[in-house]
Amino acid sequence: MLDNHFQIGEVADRAGLSLRTIRYYEEIGLVTPSGRTEGGFRLYTDADVERLQLIKTLKPLGLSLETMGEIIECVDQVSDDDPTDLAAARRRLEDVVGQGLERCDQLEGRLNDARDALRNLSVDSVRVIK
Figure (cartoon, rainbow, N blue to C red):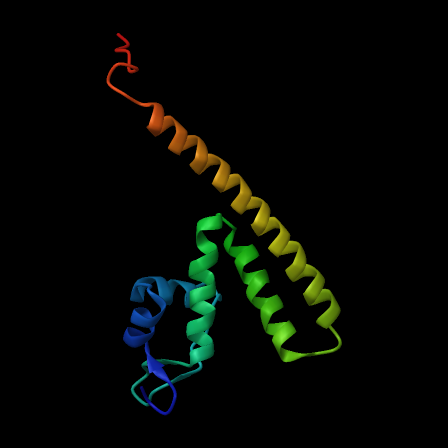
């Protein structure tokens, strides 16, 4: 740690992501290092780590990278308390949260179906199809 900044290796450990994934997220604009060392190494803050953890948490929902970027942008706007865009950011964030919750429900249904199929699976129930 350097003055409340972390190098990418420590960030990868803290966020549970690979270095390659963090670099990719930077490349597509989902996260930006808060600074760089004199040698050019990326430096991240706790807020940057939280952003990466949010992205990691949302990834299983199958949201597009564009939607993930919108979520990050909305979170930034809401946390900046900019009265100009605050209401719009909150509405968009609520909309995306609703979509995410719907996706969670869909995934839970699919998991339950898979769980039921596995419970019903036995050697006697499987037919060989030729």
